[in-house]
Image (cartoon, one colour):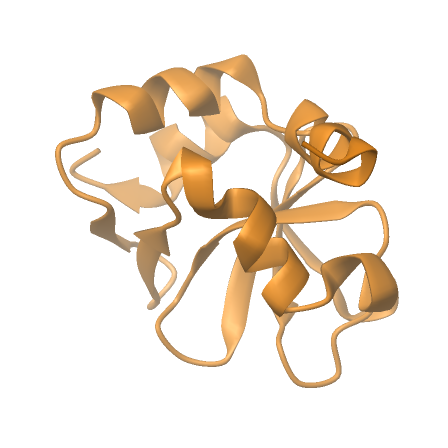
Length: 111
């Protein structure tokens, strides 16, 4: 494992990891008019490399996508953001929850 990959995984909150490990499927709905498809834990590093998040939005780690043009990402403090794939940058990140726990409780539907 490369050092950069290890650093990316450090951003994942333990509550999120537990949720993903217990999840039977990786797709659900949100109440913000977007669907969400979670990346399997063993694919998160490759997902982030593929979208070049380190280049365009350093300090974020993508963990899911909406099936369209946006991704869900954590910052280094564990806040949840929505980032556009086109025009991705730290400046275009939109905070949608102060933590994974809040995101799960207030944004996910039937989670």
